[in-house]
Image 1 (cartoon, rainbow, N blue to C red):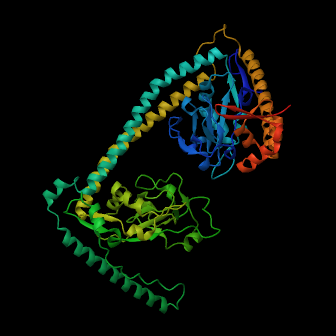
Image 2 (image 1 turned 180 degrees about the vertical axis):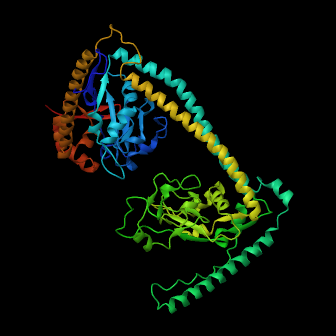
Length: 583
């Protein structure tokens, strides 16, 4: 190999193809339709710990078309789609002779410790090399050959065993720590939802209500209805004034849009009330459409592109939606001319956003400096909120109570979408503005502590991963364990691998030819006499029938036997009869 020598003298540098054999493949058309098997696809792999956790059970009748590769214990499956996601795992005994998707490169080593090559495939340096060779934008992928062409440092076999033992010794301690950190992560997520649950059931501010005696729900409802009507009337008056000004100006530009008529008040039905059984009766229960307007965003006009640099007009995408606010790291901007075409589809700092396509239900409020930003068509804004704190709305929409409603209201298609009118139907508990502010303050104080703890855990997880990668780097540079001069050199191992691989490939070639001959023979549809002539010994009558041209018609088979007359020899057995021809 044309690489710089950075490995011990007793090692060899090879490409992966030299020391592996291709997996055997099967074809569902040749399998028993009722036969069952476990199927490993990308979704079967937990890419956080590189383990196959959820293989699916299929019969060949309903097997996916990609179910083709026969697995063997010790194989490593490496997803060729989006390699950076590290969907990599080693195959254990329970999956021996089961089936993998063609979306994997199945790496099957010869006379190499299976875990040695598995650990090598999980190194960041290997992933980065492969990822640079990926093609495609939406689903960047590599071919199996790209994997096979990569270089592999090959130590003596005994040293491979020592390396794997040392890696697993060091990883055992690290993995225990990682498992504890991941458990803490999950507990924080549970606590976060418990916090929101308590907040929107009224438990978080129960003492506050005792001390402040807020106005009853009935009075709040009257005020909301009155405010909605008054707001609508103001909008109509403003519109009339704008139309008058437009007419006096010679009707230049578009005529101002008339405000939408006020929608009827939405009431809760029995089922919806039943969902709210754990929410305090001190609060008003309303549908979102009663207390705000739900409006969609807008896609870029046809042919328009993002601006090359920063402009006065940010364009907010779902990928920018962070933890209840906007992540500005990769913010996009549009030109003034593009903005003019979609200027009605902006979001203000007093609004609440929610994603309605792709990743649905991500919610939050924008920062002050993004006031007036353009909003993607994959999101909606909740605007003109009546007696509602926009942060209260955002946290509510992020609660499990709201997310369950969102899930039920999302149209299930290949590209799920949450309709705007469905958002209006979401049931929300509404306390007074003062209590909403108290709830928001309490949530944000607790979330701040959760985020700090979560950030600390993330840092520790990254440290653990860096430590693991450092161990692997040393391992594949020959610096993790000592070399033993008594070990058989890797060059000798490599010669033995080459011999075994050549022998295996030769045998597979012969088997393939035999199979083709047999398939050709079967395709020819032999007569009963031809089947018996080809047999070197008496055959079971059932087998003769199945291999003959009459395999689909037993009556014709019996007629063919009868036609043979004295040529046929029938010998009775315990299981039936054996047939042969007179010599």
